[in-house]
Each structure stands twice: as structure tokens, then as C-alpha cells.
Length: 348
Image 1 (tube, rainbow, N blue to C red):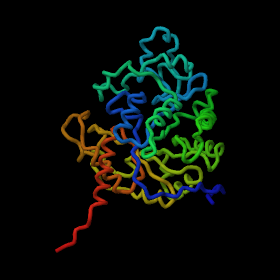
Image 2 (image 1 turned 180 degrees about the horizontal axis):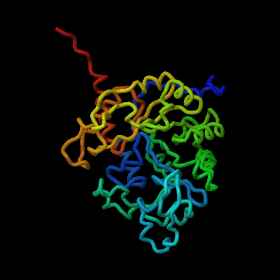
Image 3 (image 1 turned 90 degrees about the horizontal axis):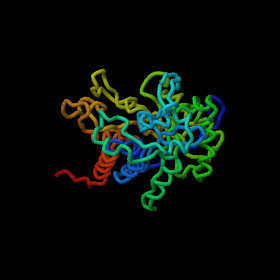
Image 4 (image 1 turned 120 degrees about the horizontal axis):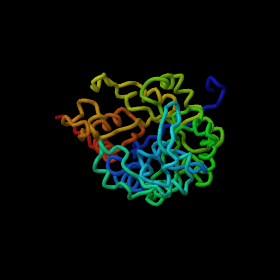
């Protein structure tokens, strides 16, 4: 029993190959959250693809990194939406732009996706305007269409700002629960895993869908207000409503101010003791996101050795990694698997 008196969710850790989770698809190569990005992630070895979910005015769940649309779609160039631009506070931050909660799903479907980080990933801009905005159901359809009995592919969806959306009259957790039921995804082995930073959202989903509901994962920021979650008591508390944690990779691979790797934490083993899986985020191939010893060249946008970073995390026992370039994690996993299968040569 937890300190709150709730019975812990049963989450035995199974001996299996760690998972490769395509973060927003494969955004290193295609604009994030597009059909092309999710399809490519699967082609590059992802076991799951990870859409971020926000809510439209009529309660539809759509895949965007945030509810403000001007960075990831062409809405700023669309005169029919010029009068929708406004400024508001979202999750404690003042933001100006166009917001999903001001548009219906039909209106959002008219928008075209663009590369959100054009300075970092200029080659992706060649795909601007080719793809639309997807709903959760459409992302699930992609994974189910690409799944085989030998290689099932699933969705690991992140809920963005659920409490904030609820305050706007859009009860996100209720909408998610209803959609999971409609998609026959409200079960542990279903096609959707749900994760969120807000504990209250995950608790609400667990209460609504029960212990036989989908896998739930607690997201954890690199440092700050969520520090208590990575203590032994915090991890035990998480296990009362969730099945795993998705911490920032810096919670496991410890760095100094210059980006040098200075050690590793015991978070993986502590989480496993609490019956939780561990899936760190986000592995990215560009130098600016890598430990200093894995950077190659002086260009922050240049490609470094992301495969070695994935290999280190797998060697530390994580149950999966969330990656922008899924093939780097896929190759690292294959290397470790091959090494484990290699025969031991006797000494002579």
C-alpha cells in the first residue's frame, strides 16, 4: 500500500529487448507529427511513435507539439485565419499566435505542416506544405496498418497541458479516456500508451480506466519542481497510478555545465525496484544535444555520435529510449543484442 492508501498498480518488469520510441515520429528527417514522420520512424526501427496531443475547439485530439500553431503549420500565411491571432497565457507562459482551442477540427484539417526547427533542420523544409495535421485516431491507424504479428507497432501519446485545457472548458483526460475506449485502446496490451508530466492527469485516467486500462507513463523534467518524483518514496508513489517513468536523459547521464559526462545516477535501478519501467527522452543526433565527448565538429547543428549515447543508456538497463532519429537507437540495440549472443571464447 502507498502512503495514500491506494493499492499499487501491478507493473512487473518483463525481460525483453528495450523499446525504440520515435519522438514525434522521425523529426530529424521529416517535419514532426506528420504522416511521413511517423511512417519513416517505423521504417527506421521504431517500436512506438510518440505524438503530442492538444485539443481543438470541438474536442478533437490532434498531434501537435503545442497548441500554438504558427511554428508548425502555415496558419500565419492564411488570410482566413488572420482575425484569430491573439495573445494569452498558456501553462504559465504568455504566448502570441493561433491556438487549436480557437479552431474546429475541420479548420485545423485545412492547415499544412511545416518544419518547426528550420534553422536546426533546414533539409526538412523541403517537405513544408506536403502534409496535414493528424488526429490521435489517424496516428493509431498508421501504426496498426504498419504492424505485423512479428512486429507490432504502437502509439505512445503525450498529453500537453491537460489541466490548462480543462480550465478552458476542454476536459482533456475525459476526452482521451473516451477516445481510447472508442479505439479499443483502453487496455494494457492495447495500441496506445499514455504519458504526461501532470500527475493529476495520469491519476484521473487511472481512476477512470482502472488498473486494467492502458499503460501510463510519468514524464519527468530534467531538474526542478519534479525532483521529489525521483526519490525512492516518489517512485513508489508513481507506481500507485503509473507503469513507468520517462525522465529527461540528464536524470540518468549526469553532465557538468560544459556538457561533459561526469557520471551516471542510480535512477534506473531505483525505478526498477519500484516496479517501474524507464524510458528516457530525448535522444537527438545534433551536436548541441549531445554530451561534449560525443560531438563531432564545431557546428551545433552538425551530427554527432548519438548511437553511442543510446548504447550507454541501454547498457544501464533502460527499458526504452525516446529518439528523434530512431535508427541510431535501433542500431545501438542491435549491437548490444549481438554482443550478448556472441559465444564466450575460452582462454588459452
